[in-house]
Image 1 (cartoon, helix red, strand yellow):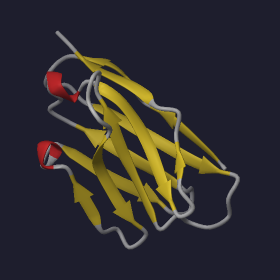
Image 2: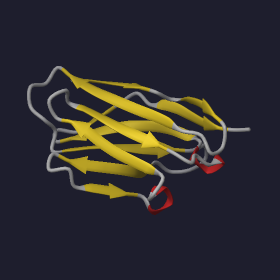
Image 3: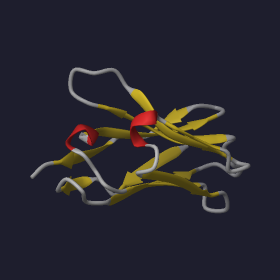
Length: 112
């Protein structure tokens, strides 16, 4: 199984980015797909997750700004990030389960 992430980059505060993560090498849909992030010197934390039934869960710090969605046919999960803040700067990791797999991470930098 491979998780291929894309969409990270540099953006100014208040800007938007969309991350995507495509899972390949598997024929079934993962029960849960999500995004975690890790900022320098901090622990990895859950940003958002979504189940096959489209039930979502968000970290309090991103509620109302980020939207997670998925395409079960393509085994792809997306994270639309709006109104980005300096504190959103981190490496963002795609996570799927079960079985559990992690993406390689994509850097998101919010800076003026």
